Length: 181
Image (cartoon, rainbow, N blue to C red; front, side):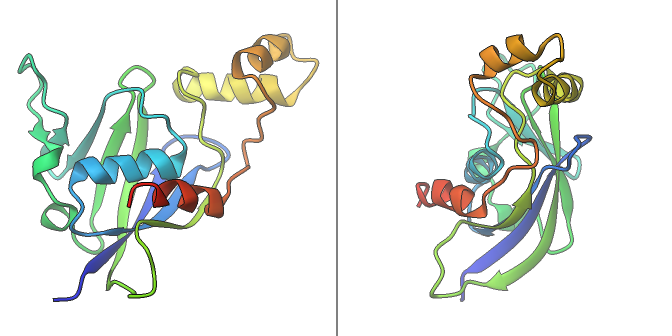
């Protein structure tokens, strides 16, 4: 049987300008590997907890205290929990609460000349870690874009360099994903 490749469109909810990525990943990846793909493609640093919401089931790292009813993501393969045209959620950083909408756009046979995972397309710079969620990101972008903004110097020092909210490189995202293989 040919290896199936899932084309996923990952969209960060409620941010402007839009931040999204289109990636091609093996359907046999477990959800912990899909999490890693999302982290690398989006530009997150994997510093916080996360979860997938697929149907009525939540997947993630098991809660050692047993307070969260979450299935272990390492035990579930993408092709077992999602199919073409399905949609599901992914939340990263339960403090800043970054919600991502994931659409399974296609399921194809693997191209024998291609390496997976790969980033196919995308737009927008990922918000910095710990920026304060959607509201904090809006405030950060406004301050960084205007040298006369009262918080510009403080934000620039915190971030350490200029920030272009529209910047994104498919080649860089793919290079990061290649480190997974």
